[in-house]
Length: 581
Image 1: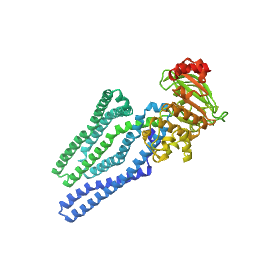
Image 2: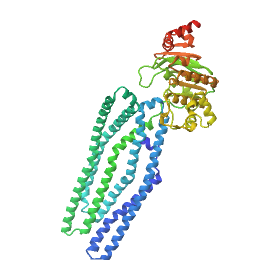
Image 3: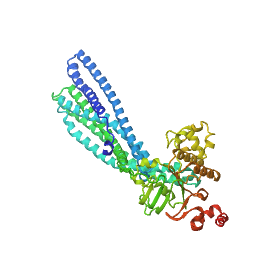
């Protein structure tokens, strides 16, 4: 809770306004039983019709006034809660945007989505109830108790027993329910994760006929969640019967005491009527408070989860030092770099060293899972090295402000991401002032102009969420065009040509070579054809460089590279190349 309210504050003036309007509405409402007492004791007993009518109109006026004041209070409350939760969502979003890849992995996508949607909505509901019922209930109880004691002191003795019992019952059940609410939120995250996996992997699940297996996984998790939910609801649900029982018992006790006092001439009928109404209003206030308290366990769990996000310091921080002057623009250097993912027992890459200079292309190849993609993720600081140094333009990447570092990099990730909107909007993602001429040039370089120009609306053709209205190869080319639009010093391609046919692959690489100028290019690839013309090729095995050189040099000196080349190009082709060399 501290993590939330230290960052997002309620509007103090509006809260004070809600308190004042609620207090005035409560006083107006609580005056009515007192007037009822006067109406019965003075008007009915004295046969004063005029007094009865006058008091009746006054009570109607007080009821209307209370309604108006409560309506104004409700409007202000809505403004407070929507504003507060809007700011809270913004804080969560900004915090998540600052997270490193490791931080995102720790929380999980589904959990972060739940925290920024369902959990915030739960807090908004609780705040709304707290500002309305949470303020109204204690005011009703306090004002009602004072007026009950003043008008019918002896009858109010019943409340001395009832109120402590109510508070005790509410406290016990709320604490018990809180324990299950925290566990329930965690299980809901698990359900969301399973559901997300099922949606994203639906084709794979069907291809392997694993529908029953996934249904069984979901069933087990769902049943566990349902059991925890049942216990939580049972605890919360027990609150109302307890309150209702004490409510009825207290009302009966008040009637018995009051009736005895009337028989002995120590109390008038009107006073007993008003006293029972006050007791009812006091108990209603406590019931309303119990409703608010009943929401607290879930709200506490939500606040705790959101607090975890807000209190998490990104594992990758901006440098606070001034960046030294660059000595060699467009240069990328690795110095004995070792990296392991958080929680891993073994490094994924070890002792990587190489230099890539302006105008050069460095390619990285190796078997699946050898750490190729991990190498280039260290350049834009998606992750930080465990040991060693990564230098860009002669400066350690840790000494850059993240914005400055990533400004000079054009990155095309392994999983191509397009944003909903249009093609132009995606092109301008890295360069906001892009023009139609810039789009046309970038798309031509990426060999994407051929299908974009056939689309209705051309550059303003619709892009669905995730780019699902484009094929895999089209998404790759659009992602490459987006990086080209940025005109960076350093291009990073993480297996970004895998969905392209050989002809398009060759043409695209030729276009890039002609247009990149002095830019540095680092390419992760699976296909030898893609990297044959690279200035240098790094061959990885088990996270270590086992070969470094040009295509022909590696055919002679690196067993693993030759094996890969023979599988892809054929033994005869490789042998011919070696003989011609």
